[in-house]
Amino acid sequence: MIIVHGTFPVKADYREEALALMKRMSVASRAEEGCISYEFYVGLSDINTLLLFQEWDCVDSLQAHFETEHMEEFLKVLPDILDGEVITRRYEVRGTGEGYEEGELASDSLIESDLPDRRTKVESRPKIIH
Image: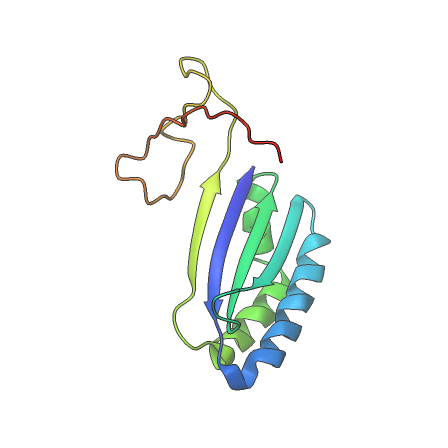
């Protein structure tokens, strides 16, 4: 599975237009083959920063997404409403492979990360039930 996360800072004067554009993009993208989820969210700390979270069954589906008409329309309008740089990260999620202990992340499972050595061990913690 491929996960994409992005942040879109939008101009306050164009916020409503940005929300409408992103709603159209979400609806059209969720109809694509291979799309598991595609949602924009409003940031709690800044209502003019919109967050994107999308999941795809494979990299080929994501690549096909970039070649759609609705992506072309989205990219055409986007520069007019942005108030800064768009930042995106793409991750590939895989099950644990042979040679990795449970809770350990294979080094090639993470496509882009802030982890310095691109490998981490997840500590097991007890569940807290309220």
